[in-house]
Image 1 (cartoon, helix red, strand yellow):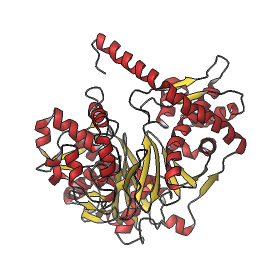
Image 2 (cartoon, helix red, strand yellow):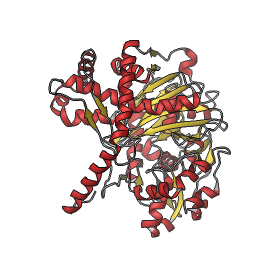
Image 3 (cartoon, rainbow, N blue to C red):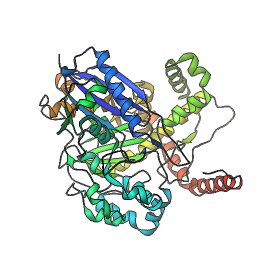
Image 4 (spheres, rainbow, N blue to C red):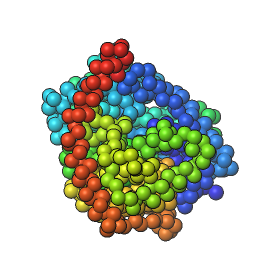
Length: 513
């Protein structure tokens, strides 16, 4: 037998998935990786712990698949994008890895916005710098940790660290390279971008760029011992997890928008030419001459998870995964109620600046839990629509491919179609991000013609459900969406006043914020 290994490292877990060459997930293993928050706005994790957890997941997946190490023909990895992982000049971890949830660089980003640096960056790099962009985090380290800054030998991403641990080679791929420092036209590094941010001394620390399916090394003796992989197994460069999810779910391509409803609201469409706009990131695709146009914000299904974790603990303990089915049934029943409730899903961030916060509008005492849950999910879908409308204006995609845990529930998938006013498709691919990484591995090993030649699609075995917008529900949600946007604008000054008051109250009590 022959298999591929796909590694998917998210913000909380590292997964290793063994796939057969038809794209079936044979075995999956997970390891939770602790987040470290040494002070407010810092979200980190230990890089060695990350590697050992991932190695353990790989070993367990191989054992569960009951395959021989030599039967793994190639390995590909993907991981959370943005954030920052550093190596020193001796190729040792330089402090903890910084996750994309980190917001320590808020003051620096604000300074850039007020001073015009963000507008200059948009023209040079195709995107405005944001809180967890490597550029912002590196500028923060230069300002606050100059000794650490001087020791930087390599600036890499999370999946690049896993590649280094597997192969001993340092580098990145085309998609990840474009997070901060590449020209959107040439798709290569551009020195004056570093200069713009005051980071010109790091020009030698940016890693070499390979295509996602390019073999960049082979499993070393040391990596083989801890993972169970065979020494010499080919490893490809891998790719950014947003692109990996779109690729694995069959949503990577011109004319469609790939939506990931998870911690972040991620919305991405592919183009054959760069188009620059502050509403999206213009980043590299998996091939030269392709671009990923990503509109994102930290405001999606994590709001749903928070509500269940906070207010439904006993039911979660009692019903487990069945609770999600129960919740969806309540939501569907409430759909016919004559109620107009808005929810802004900004528990963890928003597209409207750092001062925004979550909240319900239009809530009354006669509303039940189903009404509240319906508003919750509609608010999440509305935030995706905000991004999708921008992409539709720029690129005219006609269908959305929805992934993420909620996508498997038909009630939620239909709600997204109605709220987006757009046809939505859902694939039955297990672990799409890991499969996207495995497709790159298979292409690099010569098993597939390219990463987009998915054997599942070629064989017609990828089952896809299509959800068309319900005309009546669509009209109702169009009206609610307009109010959602109007309320967001009206609440901006109120949100900021609340944030300022919170900061003031915390300071008076000596509590850091």
